[in-house]
Length: 310
Image (cartoon, rainbow, N blue to C red; front, top):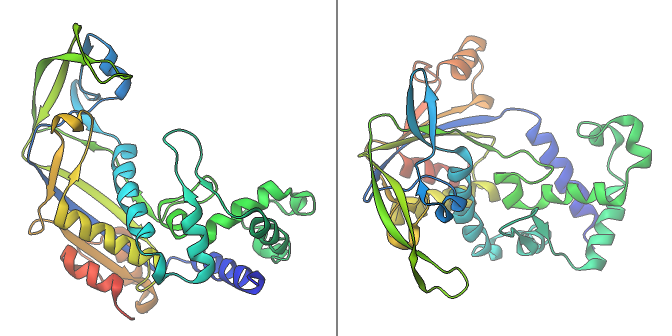
């Protein structure tokens, strides 16, 4: 039932990913509406819970790790995808619906066993040349079914956008080093994790970060308008525009709320399939701010672009 759809979809996705069709650079400015707690959950059991910092020269600064940003974006994106299943094609919808991300452990797709076995069987019909872009030619003949299952991620729009165990994300984020900030410490009463009851004898001191701005740059490659990935990304950005985000630890204490400054945030977009001049292509790859072929827009305009027909 799904064989031709599966092979055709995977072939189309792999061919699209091997060429850089477009690149968008999102320069997002967030305004904190509360203090921020940057650290690991394990620190809450210690008497002192300092802010996570990184050394730059002779100074140390608080840092928001890429994994924290990605986890926040991914959670919102997964929620958007799960609420938009009706807009997906049949096979894509089944795999997105089966997508599951546990708190610990690898991403899973809980597909019907008969459907999964049929899909793995059909994956063996993929062109050898196509498979060797991801797997060595010498092991194609001995590839195991469990290894072929990884190609199912290509049909999952959540994995295509945010990445999976065997699939690179279309979004590149970076760490954010916070330089113009000040920190302060506050002592708290600990909680028993099992009962949720305050433990008066357990005290710990946590360090908080205060700042009036947090910058984040996101590089988006090959998220083309009207694709399922584009719809999920558009929904994610729209959510952030309307609702803001909560980042860092101690969220249950009401800290870490950030609002996106729509006025100060911007998007630089280069559509390489429309640029014919080699010099302009090079400029778009290396100097987006100065490149003539790069379009500059607001986040709302980029959301509309992602949802528009080309």
